[in-house]
Image (cartoon, rainbow, N blue to C red; front, side):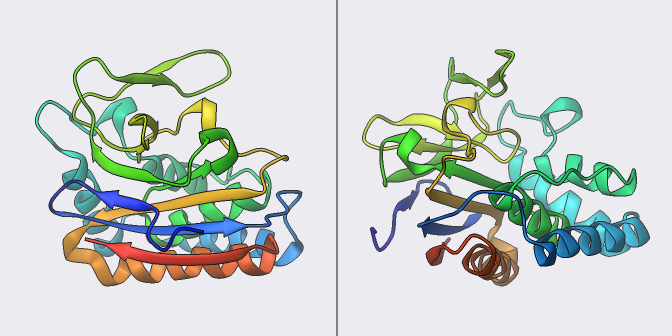
Length: 219
């Protein structure tokens, strides 16, 4: 494992990163499913609270860069999860996805999970998207435009693979995933909370996926 697998090439941004090795990405154990349901139940109660409103605003402001406007379908993934929680429709998928969703629902920070073997690298950079960049984000071939969007790119190719909105289909985790990169996105003003969220995700993957995890915070 690299000590610091992620470079941060932006200002005003904090990212928590983790590397998980030896994952078993099967059905989630009961404790993780219970945590997911508990997180969703909490958000049902406080979805319109001052805390939730401030957190949504802070994350949107983080993504509001040059031409990018985080509204409509361009909203951060954490807002979609909040809506599914309120509607009582949070899916149970697998360990990596469910651990991601627990922490994202609890904190309202968007989180990306990248399959390291599909990415073909253990080195990444967080930067703003450039003119003309895009990637396919689902099995039906829909594309996400990346211009001015905060993203994670594989190094040395500088190929985008994840964003706080939707991750690339090419590097999404599945039942075969054994090595994964996690990225928690937040504003620099909330560095302590981003760190806590990253520690929470690391703990869930250690206990639920049987992974060996190292993590840190940049920015």
